[in-house]
Amino acid sequence: MLYAIAHFFRDNMPWLWDLIDVLNSFLFTMCYARRLRLISGEGIIIKGLPLKFKIVPIREIPTEQLVAFFAHQPKEAFEFFKPHGFDVKSIKKLQRNKAFLAYVLLDGHQISGYCFNRSFFHGKGFRGRMVDIDYRGMGLGIMMNRILNKVGFGIGLRVFETVNKDNIASYRSAMSASNVRILEELDGKDLYLEILKV
Figure (cartoon, rainbow, N blue to C red):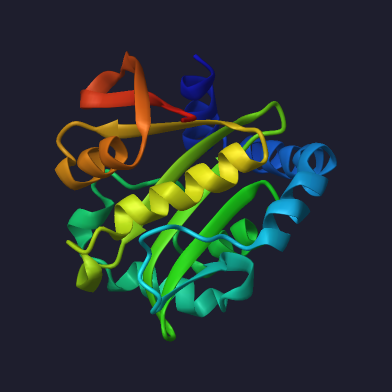
């Protein structure tokens, strides 16, 4: 229910969604700042991630580089991936949002993957990810799911995701990297999943 309401506001009342985002960012920082500092201090180490890849928060990446990453992806990559806008203004907004815990995988200076936990002050996070077209088939989606699980569970969030059954790569990635419970089958073959802590 909350998921449907949030998507209604995001898609039909963007001004209200922006206001909710600002308020949520403030409240999330009040509730989770200390825990985020602790997990940031440890660094994010993911077993199995090749050494050539570096995990970097999107706040440390030039906005234009992120926009170029999204522009480089084929149209079909966005068929099931529409969590936010991909223009400069939208990306800058996300970089300022303290509740939007987003990271890129860097291969040298090249962004090879993007992942996020859209977090809420009441203790829920919704994860998503995109692997660069040139890096598909290397298991990076599974690695990014592990990053999001480590961060989300590390600060005490319940983690959720929607995945479409027709989006085979994303579906397999979600199932391979995590224990999941299917909460609901939504319209259009979307599955609403809770990611379970192991």
